[in-house]
Length: 63
Image: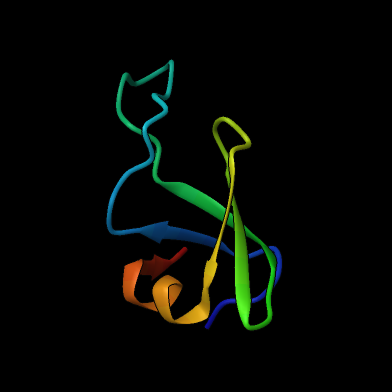
């Protein structure tokens, strides 16, 4: 399961590109839990907030 500080991977990659590999980033850090979940891209620090239901549908795996 995930908790605050967990690294997660979503089904769709984020639009930012990792400079070293040229691939799209797909690693996020959970920064808030509750009825809504807030995640931050570990590559570009973009923050996204979504409902827990949407998050669990879009979650691929916990790293």
